Image (cartoon, rainbow, N blue to C red):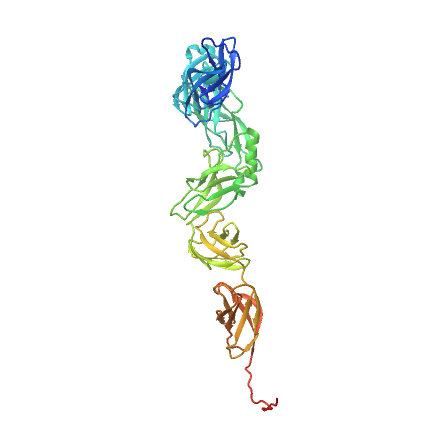
Length: 552
């Protein structure tokens, strides 16, 4: 068997394997390089790379190309997922330790896995899952394992070896500390730290954080717990590292440092939004200069990964993570039916310790929209639209969003009405929705944007009878639209007769004062001043005509 990565040398022995020319190998349909090994009088084949799904094993028949013909070796080679080693526990072994637990990937009960200790001792792994295996210790050779470091490898064929990046150490009786988790905690102390290594049950152990001592809690010969002591940090300080040790033990590596971080930055934390919907999922970003300094300090001092966890009241947020900008982002948890406000807490060590951010997060019901008035507006025209719906709140980030075109500030009139002034620049149908916090959005409704409105080119006559009844002709730059209205002071009229493609008539009302003529192209939702003034003149009266007789 071999992993699906190329490079394993498969040696084929047989009778009369004395090729006169080129040697090639084929695993199923995968042809690869081969050569003749004169020392072993055999043919060696280099396995190819095989694409396969996780956890699956493929068996391919092996063919040899010898003396110009393909020969079936009547053997199969099994290809499996590559093995990876991520961690070992425990890393310090003694007479009381019977096996090593290996965490990684690519383990399969179908393919036997062998464990190699110090290049000489072997045992067969017990597969627990595809990510966990247990390797019994060859304690019959314990004296051979005593040394500074013990190498550890896994193999499926005793040809390809996957070496662990973490060495083991065998101990006759001494206590050892190998690693701790978590490796960071707040300066006010109280962090519950798991300490791993080899410890004596009857020993009166104490944990040392620098020169401060705390009690050690014995859990097993490989596991104890310590509570971090508080440490004083200047307000301008960000991080500090101290050595952690256990009385009666010594270090196996230099990564047993514990990093304290200051929580003073919680007073000037920047939070993207402090409002969110009760259904949850609101994306909240936490940042600020002090937080950036703390995260940079942890990385620079100990190169330790920060595992953020954000908590809203008693509920944990989801998808908490650190961005490249050194901000922390998360999705607020749900709080169905509860519109209360809750405090926000932050942890930098995987939820072991939380500290308050001195901010409240306010929940509200997700808004919904039911109607937009008007349903259609003109491009390149400033128009007020009214949106009706439910659960509107007068938050500072309340906005109307016109698809991907623009976001404009909204005026929240009531919990059922919002108004926005918009200036669309394209023609077509766009989807409009509302946001109250700049993050969470309502449902969408369509809004039609039509081509720009016609322009009034001429009005004839502009002098009309004061008693009314004058027929006025309006000429536009293009055809009048349905919903066109003419407005003179308090008088509104629809077109009476359309003349050609771009003219129509209406009957002027009675009046006395000069009046500007307004025109609407959207059923009166908005009017445009044509800048043309109608003059109302008294009616003419003819009393006599002189002479009354004409000569031709």
